[in-house]
Length: 488
Ligand code: AMP
Ligand code: ZN
Image (cartoon, rainbow, N blue to C red; front, side, top):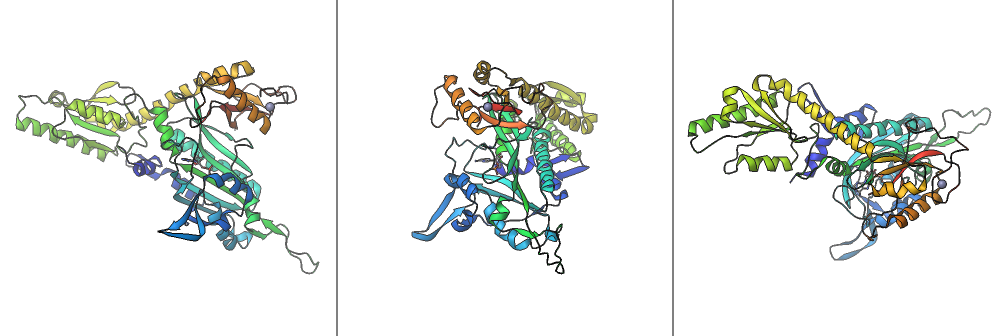
């Protein structure tokens, strides 16, 4: 078993040798001026229901505390599904002047969403750990800039730490965050199931919440002039919220895992190298055994000194083969085998978890070569995942090719009109044509929009006013290449 909290913290921490150590995401948001804080998990219904669209979106998933012990509560209390409504009454108090802006607060916490749609470990759970950032700005351009800065960091978490490729883009109106202005996302894809997965989201909330919670300042661009009788103009602040959850772990597990179990990218692996003594036989003396065990631990200690997260497995009563399997199942990136013959030759056999490739390494340069190899494993894992990711994405310009592509576990990039009704008919029609038994509780066989990629330049040129939408029965002009697919 792997412990969730350890992985969650580790995925955001990256340690390169001795010289560089950082809490990857936390440090980067702090550099943007974000401060960490903590707010309560309970919300009164009065506050929760203040923003109409928001609560409409979340209402079905809100869990309520209705009883304490045996007594019914007079007023039921909600458990936060996200903290906009918990935090913003305070923002209204704290933001009194444009000089109080920008306000940037993040919390590392858990939230509860009573998901009815196929709960799945890590991917969609009823309680999940995440960070949620909430910021307030004077202008929309400032808010827009931050939305993209955060999205870039999310892309970094997936691609640089988890070795998982994602596509940054914007969500359709139908799929955007309830109550927000627009939602940006990094979209991942699980090739083995042929399903897209929303990796993390950075929302511009616009002024909807600031109007509901009365978070306003006097507009500095329109100053008061008492002589001329000019009154101060009220400006509602521009807000963003952004979140990345333990779903990241689920995506990483599904993208890299194989039939033997987990395959962890070295940068996030809590343990990067396991050193195992081998080659002990019936005739091995007590001293010989002790020497081998000492050298094994010495090797692990040497690697730790070189900044590698390494450990030796000196447990008695388990064969080397049993140990190999158990560490393979846990996804430890490298296994080093050390036996009497290796000691005599001053070598160790290095086995990669991701490829299974075995290479003898000379002991003398390990301090440099193992960190280098770990970085190579990291980048090759990404490259391989990217290749498969790209192979599972089709540019589709004829409806007849759409569902067959889905059935081959691909997502489809189509010219799209961006209309909600069109999105609905794509979903219905693709579900109908899928000819898959639709189980109520299984994810849908129909395709929905995953995102409109920011980088449109990688697709053929869309001729605005000429290229038509691919949507089923739709004849409208296409606005942008959009990724559609089955999803989690
Ligand atoms: P949201 O603020 O609703 O956009 O959520 C932020 C991020 O949390 C999403 O982009 C998902 O990656 C993740 N997320 C949403 N719901 C769940 C869930 N039930 N379990 C795990 N992660 C989730
Ligand atoms: Zn259309």
